[in-house]
Length: 232
Image (cartoon, rainbow, N blue to C red; front, top):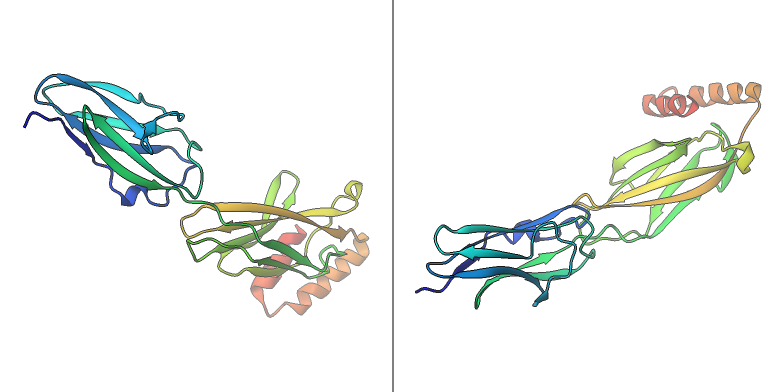
């Protein structure tokens, strides 16, 4: 009757497939009717050796129940892993399982053709073979322009897209870095970059090609907007 009462009040649902890149908090309550104890957190039955933002041991005295929290710093736990955290007071232990989510596992990012002319060649972007248990996966395609990432196709379940591109830098052999972001259904993401060659055209030829492109997509407002956006 005088044994301590130890309870982890954080629910199992809150600790399922969590994002390990964020701070993790596990809350418990310890109460004693007499004496005192060192309320202690442990992981997988062993002493805590992790980067914690709160004390692993807290002295609890008899009387009012004491809230005890374990706070782990971001990126402390490994992705796609299972853990058991326990809170103990004397010989009474309360435990809970925790699983970490992982970002989508890489497949391939393919751009065809491998080279072309600015704002003229239609490039096809394809994400192939990416996997994650938390589906559906969503994809976002873009390209790097200076220090900014310009979006070609917003986040959607489409694993492919098509667009013209601006030229790469002549000083870098006209290489243009194209980006791919793949998300799982829980919001964890993987970023992947690849390069393609986009050659710069003369201003006269470029203007002519843009006009032809706009005429060919005049019936498709979205395509026309994308051409104008990329050109700018």
